[in-house]
Length: 183
Image (cartoon, rainbow, N blue to C red; front, side):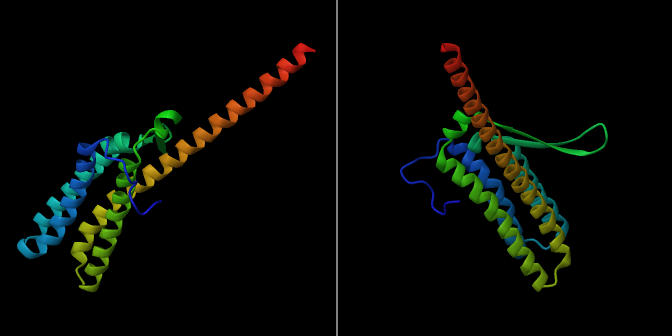
């Protein structure tokens, strides 16, 4: 992935981008600042996890669809097995997605998980096992979105390649058939 946002492009969905970032920032900021202002672990846990859960929901159900054209979910089938489901826009629509929106989506997804990992290391160093629980829940929610959207992106690329192969094969077949029908 490119480290710099695409130049010359504006965000097409600024409100979605704002909400994509705001709950991530709110969860991280509350967790970090609560050490200074709040002396109650239960409040820190509940508010931080609530903000992380809101972020998870917004990313999974709103910003993923709008900013990168992807959607994923997990179902339990009749046999009790977990089944991943993926949706993506068609090839043309995916190609038209705003590069800056996409850049923001993916980088904030990864940077948030990295921030939670850094905070986990600090909690380990300070021997604060209870705060590792908060971080563990938030990191799990972040990683779930990373895994879901990464699998969804790979599935979308595979479908595009499959469509291209089928289109090419169909074109070649029709060309061969028309060549033999002329003779």
